[in-house]
Image (cartoon, rainbow, N blue to C red; front, side):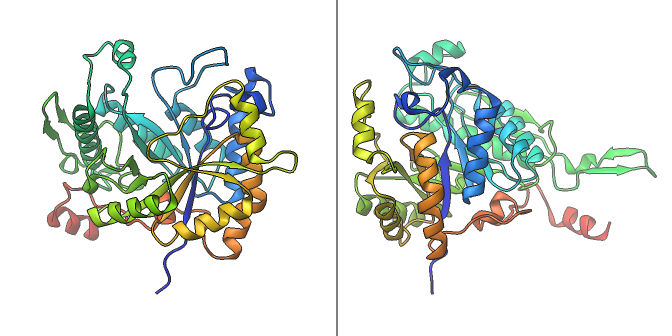
Length: 372
């Protein structure tokens, strides 16, 4: 039986994966935060056929040193991208290490509503102690504590999404009722560091729950839709994908940093140019590819045996996104190694994920819904 084709995601934060990527960007540094710049890269990704774009975030600046720094919140950028696109999914990075799960739930629910069911969520973790000072919260330190906050945060957010059953908004003129109060449910969560009570203030998202993506091991498998996996080699990355699926995560996406040959410079020449200003340090859990577009297609074909998709992190967006759009994605589509999203579908549908029922829904309410 043939394996389903790869789903493709791309990271659009900043000017690229290299800390000095801005030096090769095709715009003035001051235009990085402009809506025109964001709309242009999002449109390029959507037109190329990517299923999902992700947007990184942190309460801390994205870089240090002499380069330009600055970032608008990922959820706000995602809402803008959702309004300026119509097909591609949009997933901001949101960490629950210090943020209130109630606010995270409301933000992502709203994003799913404005995007008509195209919202995702890349679960982040604030590991820098400076983030605690910026939030004004006690420091969460160590892998176990970070994983606990991520686990509890995702669990609460999912419960809040479920706290409004489908069709809780009835808009009944005959009975003068806007809501069916019996279809609202109070979340009653008590964790190790906080508790949450009450329902959400936003109706259930169109997808039921926006798609949750998380680095493998950060969030329990039963709370994750897509595990982000990687390794230093294709073999390690494939094994990580197999392990994530064996643990029960529905989908596994390989994370790959890519530097591609362009008509003007080879990938190695472009990296060497940027390395004069700042090193491109290896990130644990991310595969790195340097070379031609044809070589990347071969690598993705190899990975397709073990993972369900890939998230690409281009060296320089203005250069590598063009090569991906002209040479890599078309070849993947021709070979049927990858698939592009269809207009009018939700992100869950594009990824082949079912729409979950609210965990509060009962057989009684389902019968009432069917006989209304």
